Length: 173
Length: 182
Image (cartoon, rainbow over all chains, first blue to last red):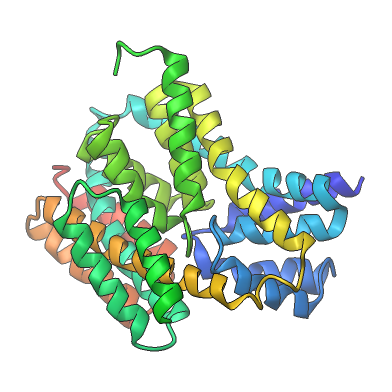
């Protein structure tokens, strides 16, 4: 029964995660700490600090963590699946529709405007990552170097660049 | 890509997304530069325009960007099974890592070297996402409408601090009513 409840709750959380990242914290806090009492305030803060620096969507990380605390491995898996479930269905439906809309005039107008707005959303993402994660000037310098390397070496695998940045971080930060 | 065995394509998509998911630090947007270089540059699964379309649609719908992008890209290239396996692929690495952290609760974050490694990667992500933003900017064919829309969205986002959902809705409506669709 608990597993079903976990699944449904994280279905809900998965769908309200818009634009990703930190926007989800207040909503998640209200759900799992204040109304359901699934984890304590302290654990929540601990998890937020970890989720920001581990791979994967922050909301998914929180779901996995809370699921594990509630019901061990099955809980972690069920919570994560719940988190994935509705976005997956919605995107699937949208993808099926959009593939057929390529010649539609209204869709073309919609898309060309949205592509412009998305540029601003990307600027916001960069801004939020830097302001939320960097606490002195050194990461900014490293970011600038990564930016130049990314633009200059088109053949360089961006993942190798990230690994190099990680190693520099271990040595210099 | 038509000459390839569909199972082989799905397997390749699975490995790409699995590999990308391991390095997605700081939220789903970190996967965008990496995916662009692999899907558009190296493997030529998607054209420039298709990639930006995928990213734009994934960004404006509810749900996390990573899941949305994996589902959409997977469907575009290999229909339902592509979508399903891309989604599974991006879920496994974070699921495994966080489960391990939850098991060793309290012992992980104190490990300073890991924090420094992650901060270094995050700095790299910020640099790469700035780069991809600039690239997309250059590839946009700007006309008067788009320039005004860009400045207007920027104003709403950073000065008036409007919720991004509304900015997307306003932009989309303006585009449908006034845009040219090129």
